[in-house]
Image (tube, rainbow, N blue to C red; front, side, top):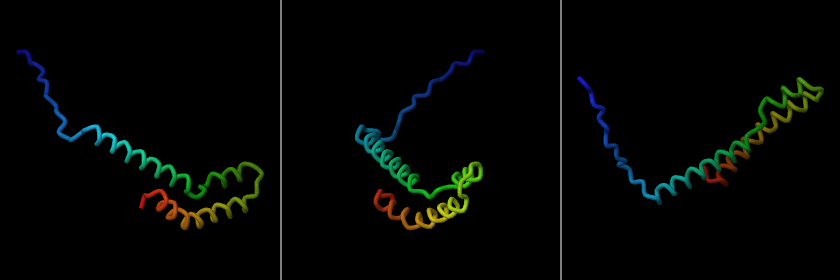
Length: 87
């Protein structure tokens, strides 16, 4: 007995008019912009400290700059979020 493959008639029931697609693209672009700006405003990570360990650098100064960037980011990140329009 042979089985025939039945094709399903798939229809998209969402309202995908060009204006909705454009709105989705714009909101996606705004979201991507907000994520990029916030990521750029994040404090320094551990990478500078590791580089200070590998190369002859002032480790104390690097550690202090990491701490300062974390403390300052507690103030600057909310301001950046408001300016970008995330909040």
